[in-house]
Image 1 (cartoon, rainbow, N blue to C red):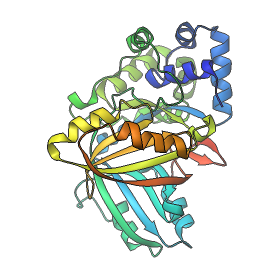
Image 2 (cartoon, one colour):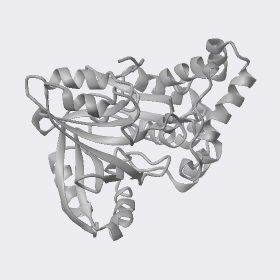
Image 3 (cartoon, one colour):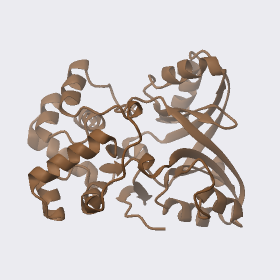
Length: 335
C-alpha cells in the first residue's frame, strides 16, 4: 500500500514524468531527499517505471485492440509469444484465462508485408478466434492517467508541473518523423529509464549534455518521443481491473467518452471501430468497489446503450514493461 506522500509523488510523475525531485518536493511538501528515496523505493519494488517511448505513428502504424480467444492448453504459450513482441502492449488474460486482451501497433492496410501480427494470429493453432478493433480516438488528455489511488493534485500544483513539462498536443501535429539512426543509444536509454539525467544520457551516447538536452527537446516537440508512467495497480492495493466494451449512438460517442475519463476509476477510454464503439479500462479496489462504480458512476453517464465486461485475471504487459512475478521489469525488445 502507499501513503499520502507516495500518492503525491505518483500524481506528479503522471503529469510531468521528468520533473526534478526539487519540483516534486515543492508540490508534495516534503524534502527533496524524501521524494528521491520514495521514488527509488517504488522503482526497486517494481511498482513504478518511467520511460521514454517512440510514437508508433512515425512508422505508419495505428493502435488496435485485440480480443484473442485461445485453447486452454495453449493460452500460456500464445500469451508469452505476444508479450515479447515489440508491437504488443497492455496485454492481460481475461474471462477466466481463456481470452487475451491486448493493444498492438499495426498498419491499417494489409499491403505492408506477410508478417503482420493479426494475420499470424489467425494462423496460430492455439488461437480459436480474433476480434480486432481500430482505436480511433483516446479521450484521455496527454497527462491524464488513473487517479483512483488518491485525491488528485490541486489546480495550482498541476499548473506548476505542466509549466515545467508542457506536453505538445500531438493531435494537432502532422505525422512525426522517424528518429535518426544516431538517436538509437539515446532512445534505448530512455526506454529503460525515462528519468535518466542529461549527464547519464551523455555518458551513454558520447554526446555533450547540451546536445542531449537539445535533441530531447526536438524529439518531444515533434511528437516523435513521449514519456509515460507504468504502474502496477494491484501492488498499490487496487486488485480489480476490468475492460468495459460499450455501445452508444454516434451522436453521443464523444460526449460519453469525454465524460468517462472524469471518473477517477477510469484509467483509459477510447472510441473504437469494431463490434463495440467505445471501450474503457477501469481499476477498482475490489468487487464491491467495482459494483459501486457500475451502479453509480457508470449508471449516471447518459448515452450508453449497452455494455459488456471482461475481468482481468492475470497481468502480462504494460506500455513498455513486462510483468514478472508481480514486478514491472524493463522490456528490451525482441521477437
